[in-house]
Image (cartoon, rainbow, N blue to C red; front, side):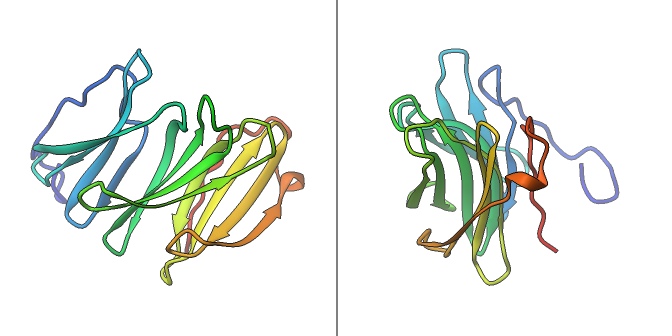
Length: 168
């Protein structure tokens, strides 16, 4: 739909478990896709929803693509831990879906889930990650170098599963 609310274009995403993450950045729409076999990818669409290209995410290293944020010509995603690498992943892509940087938020051997991500106007990346009843807010530079980490578990219910972040 356009801004006045009139129908503009539509597209069918690939995969039956797709569309959890939608991010608009740099004139493109980025959509997460997942199929029943576990293939995970991000697709880039033009403003009129023409599919241009995709990047496949290795399910052994990266679990579900759980949230995304666009700023400054880059796409940032927070992802669950994978089959062989249990830490949550932060991944930075350029607009052509080339991986620029990656960071792992670890809880030791425990599996970690990515829950929410924002990028501040000055380019710092803040993400919420969980493992069991532990909730951490982590802050990274725009190049995904770690800056700080805080355990904020006491601020959330012990069964908090879906944490969204907003930056004002």
